[in-house]
Image (cartoon, rainbow, N blue to C red; front, side):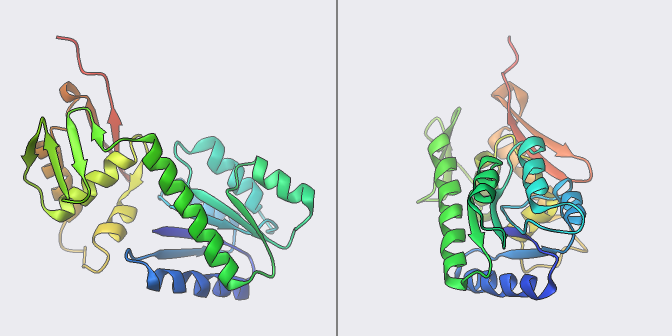
Length: 238
């Protein structure tokens, strides 16, 4: 779980970080918290990195949180969930933010337990929306989360647990660019990456094992300087 927090007040940033870190400590998957004091800095990272959740203050000296929210909805193929966390609590402000695409709106000063509950609810909704919009069957591939197996036409494909989880992540995010840092932090959170390229090796294996080629209806693209994107394509006519 990669979370970007935008607030120009350092003390408030630390308070949000501490609250989310408590959620991270209780989660099965590690969380990676990234804090920004300038909207421009966050926009720059959104062009280069993948995040699951944005927590945005509204009023900043450069680019406002509302502008960041609008940019993410207008320019990103699959924008992350977003919560506005701001001292602006007028009805018109709340309506404006929700209409711009915010998933929730929390007023300052926030109560830590309430923020945790709202973050959890937003993440659950996004997870349910992805599950509802996609089956565990993708063309001739069937994913079984209970057994951590993939089958093609009923025949199992030999995969390690990490290969399965990486493949499931790619298929669950069809069409969404996933940065290398996002994938490393999700699947290799505690390992040293400086002397090896485990992600590239696993991508190579998945291409071969799952047949991620255009003739089977898939295209696993390498995005130079960024990461990977899995796309569904129409198989070439014979």
